[in-house]
Image (cartoon, rainbow, N blue to C red; front, side, top):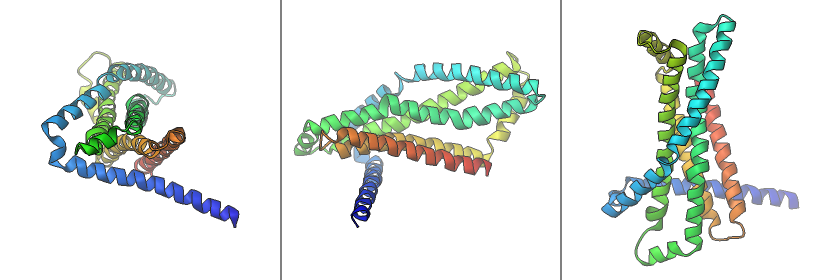
Length: 260
């Protein structure tokens, strides 16, 4: 009976944590759709967070993706040529690198560089009493502090993924065909065969849900643990575990949708 009670309490705590994530997401969605969230002062705060969370990390991430793309594409092309499968090399590169690796890498990189630090910053603001001071002045701290950081995290992931996918496709063309414009028609047909409507939809949804997960879950964990400084680290670790689990489930669902 004692073990059953402990398990029941743990299950209730996990369900409550997930419910807080869903509730925060619903509240932020309502705030994002509210015109009052885009007043002149709010637009300035939002633009500042979007710029600070995307522009500083984009060049370094693009360089890393370019180097990884050069290595992986070269390995795949040389291996395919050695086995007489050169006609499948480009399709394999697009499927593995663009469809799978880049969105996942963009989400993890954005989580490491901006969304997790943003969550820690919000937790520190709440622990310092900033949220209470804003409420006393009639300012909603969720609209003022949380919504811009979550929106900027989503924007950062989407921007990193989009820029990196275009960069990887350009590098793949140059490595396979060289500096010639005459192979562009065949290249676009090959890429178009990979990105059929269903795969394109799954790719877009996967990237968006990656962005939503890495932006929202660390923030929910930070707000959950901000009230008690002693348990803040444990809440952040549980938030990271929840984020990793959600990313894994999204990736598994996309793989099933693409290759089932």
